[in-house]
Length: 135
Image (tube, rainbow, N blue to C red; front, side, top):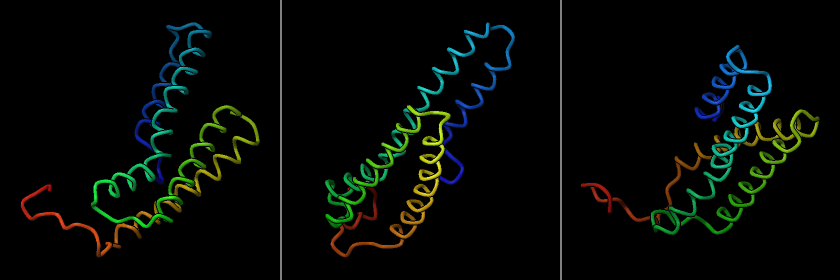
């Protein structure tokens, strides 16, 4: 999470490719870059919802009894992150977008550390996986 997603990096490099090519007119390059930025919002949206969705799946599957307060906090955080991502997108190149991206950067770091801590904790009520594979 510290370095960014692979999809974001791929779209950035494609954008650089189209920006530097002389085969396209300026209007075509601008249109392609706008499209790449819009397509890039898909992995950003998925990334923001990754934590609450994954915690909901393990809870509903009975693999881990996630405390309700933690699950609600994950959804609130995920929705706030989602708002930051889309608000920065809609207000691109403004101080508001810069502020949102800075908050998002720190939020990603805190969530990464939280997930590392979560990985070291196992609820005693969680089902154990059989030794021969998936349940």
